[in-house]
Image (cartoon, helix red, strand yellow):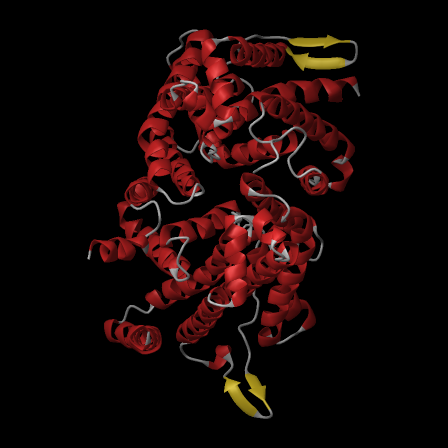
Length: 326
Length: 288
């Protein structure tokens, strides 16, 4: 037991060292500063995917994360641009706004299951896009542009985070921000899954009626899980808006929602860190295939189909398979 | 008003035919076919090539669309979905496969047919103008054909041996297998039929709206909407959902015109409310 625990701690430390020390060092050594942007995107997308994974964990297929990412982006952008809020304050507000919205939406639709829930959430993504187009506050198809970079964050006169606009390398700053949030997000997820609530969620995934019959408050649990999921979506959307300094109704579309879901599938639905690995592989795979030009999508989707045929339970199931053989 | 209803009926007939294919695949395999819209687009492009480019008769083109898509559907079931369903721990894994095939079709369509909007010459010229209804003849023909196809499909499912086997399969897979239904074979036939329906609608509609490589996704979403309204996996539900969506779209475009492009927003909102009252649609099975 202690041996296992030591391995886990060592793996965690190694992961942190790679993310915060090895990757920046490697990038500054190689001079490929564009990789910061790619890795920041991976970190943010994996936060949103983690949310989707959590809804998978309670047995729901969520293709609506794009809606919350878009909402989060708009909430942050509107508060920063129209009301002059600090970005750091809008970040939790965007998350909480999405969580609140998801409670309202979730109460009726979480009664649905299987493909019904999947289709409704897919439609939800479309609704968010159409709302962003139709509402006056979101400025229609023109979107909100030239959002200022995040300012300084200081508590009691001590500057915790410097003003991003004064930094000479804001890419690194965004990378560190996104990576930190990703680490926090997955730490929360890991804790959640290995807690009492996590076990209860698993009971929902397997059989809701049975869980309900032995006294699990299923309606409450699934709304909580969905709200946490949407919170992640909102936060990642808000940072995306800050990085690109703009947000449009087409910033997050059905394709993005589907991709969030694919990230989870690819990494493996049975593993907490599946979405992170899935996002990394899919995003980098897509980027690497850029050189193949017009065949990019063809090769990408072809590989995805092959991967699905060979490893239908996700990339992380590979580790389990080798363990079984031992 | 008559005009609005006529438009709604015409749209509804098309939509119902699209939804039928999707719901058939879902009923038999429990697979949500994300690639349905792409299959529709592929059917449209095949008809465009055979009828528009090569100048062969329209009926032949429609046949080519249907047959090609049926073959593609059968192959997909045999080599992709069957394998994944067998190997995967969770049924939902087929969704990744379905989404991947949707991307794959998108890529193939883009490579072969390009990104331009394509149309074909009208199949019938002239406009019907009587009793306050204005409707081009080709729309009437296409609408009538769609209704004929729907009727043929329903009759086939109801009275043929294959149809009966598929209905048994949809009701209870294990029980059907125990009664001696060859599950694998009929799953394949069902998938092929679903894909064929998508291809045929694509071929029909290319004569009216034309086709371009980007409309696959939106068509899939519309098909999901119809299936949700009617209830997944039920033939009657798909037909009802198709006509209801067609009618709502037609009415919405007229009534809500002054508020801008909000028809679909209203439809979505109405759907959310409806589904919270009736989670399984009009006549869906009680499980998802």
